[in-house]
Image: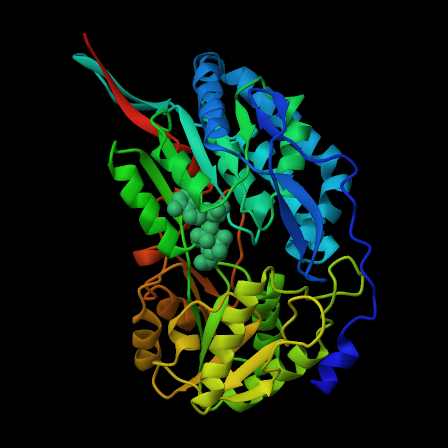
Length: 485
Ligand code: NAD
């Protein structure tokens, strides 16, 4: 704790005042609400702004607008591409105003918020430019047979609080490019940055094509049950994902679910512990561990474990924890009090069961939802922080003697999002990585993502794919056209 206090920044927050109250975007209009709800800055634990509270009537109005806009929007692909490019420019133009608000409501360092906005513009340009080849599957004397992709209609895009903008735009961009219209809802913990983006995009997208509303579980449920919704694209917890799958079944709405993860990182006996620790720390503690596809449990060969733990602990103790608005901050707070409490509970449970904190181990006293960057050893499978998704700045490191055993333990999970294997011999590591039961496997890195590659979880980590052509296809149905000759 003493170490950490040294590294807690003395910076005092100047949270950005949102000059004018943010508005919902429905049918191209700025829409106000009768009620508002508080938005808390996790670095201070205090309310710094309010957001308009969406009603079920707003949900109806948003989907009505999306349905009305659909026929014209689906009709002209060139216009859609041009609009997506203009949207990317609008995101770039708004980034300076939105990034500090994203930091204030989410907690992440300002440079990370700026990066989120750049990434959002990149996704819009990527999908504007993506080429899809014509799919002729037969062309002979008797027939011309072709597969075409058709948009679905109004899409419900529902995002979590860890990357409100990137995750939202990663749905909006392919959905719109494919010819659908969208109703986008961020998490009630981080509503403002998305509302501000809606305001910036209002001038660019035709009315009704992109609607932005707020709300929590009830409004999310109203979106997923809405009779006009043809597709739900959801990122969030596995528990909510299962409820959404049940809601979608009533009228067979199309579904993409990007859910929780408990990624294993397997460090083989020939890995360089210092190099591995540097990269493992960067990926496991990025966004203060609040990343779906981050390393969340490390299985290390017994021979490299002590050096690896030492290097990780040293890195954790050196990390600058503080308000994301402070340029010196490396790790911000946990986004909200319930999540901070959950991380604290999982770490305390591990310590009570004999784990040793090589670094950190508890919440940081004072205002805000800060937690010491924590490295745990002496912990194993069957302990909650190993078996469950912690989603915070605490990483357990577990010893193994046999690679087959490590693989079996990594795979003994209902989650299957990502995973990684670390070794001086990339081929050896790749052979192990290929056997991880995960939608994504990395070698000597983790969480390496790009718009053009598939992002997908197996088992309870998801259903369907985002990114690349796979992500575009997820917003379409297939249609066969067979022309006899
Ligand atoms: P959450 O499931 O609590 O909420 C996500 C969103 O769903 C929010 O906008 C929320 O308001 C809404 N919601 C809640 N109940 C709903 C319902 N019944 N119907 C429709 N919508 C509803 O998740 P969270 O706590 O915001 O996010 C953290 C979780 O998200 C973690 O488990 C993390 O792993 C996961 N996540 C996954 C990915 C991925 O791509 N696989 C990415 C980021 C986060």
